[in-house]
Length: 109
Image (tube, rainbow, N blue to C red; front, side, top):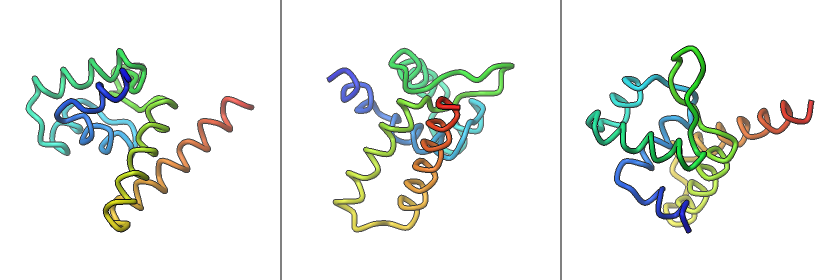
């Protein structure tokens, strides 16, 4: 239930969609999501504490963890059931699915 509470915060879905495309710096996420810095900072801290997002090394920004990729993928699939497969969501679903496969194959190797 904690994950549902976390993803229900304002701005969380936008951040997950932004990071779903790949790792980004704080300002890149801020401009893409149009969230003010205070809200974005709160959302990122919550997502990090939940294990959904991780800070990249060498101050390279933020990225979804394997857990974050799975959650984002499931959320998008649920959204698609109700929204009749919007092309932008389908593209993000495909991106997340391939990223999840990359993560799985790198942990097996």
